[in-house]
Length: 128
Image (cartoon, rainbow, N blue to C red):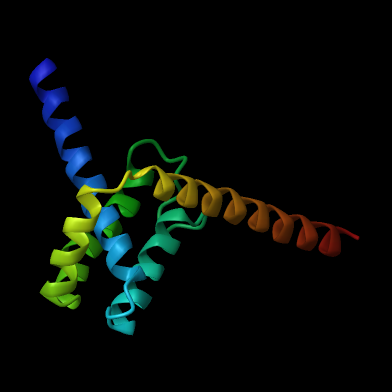
């Protein structure tokens, strides 16, 4: 069981590094607009409380999020020129990944807050 957990942690670390590299690539001004738009859509879907399969459904609820992220991780590097990806890989190795976590956490909280406000507004409007 310990080996499996170690492999999962290593995979999660690689996944986090690749996501950070893509984050840096999307912030680069040389990155095509289509790649940036797709990246924003993927992150927006992953952070959105509205999913194809609701997250509270045990295990299956998160599979659509993981699938979208993995699909994006497969497609986006092909849309971004290799020189930009190489530059971002070099840059990512020298930077901490913590700022991305704070940005993602802030976006997630803001997203839930806005969704709650919209649902609350329409609930009172329809009920009243």
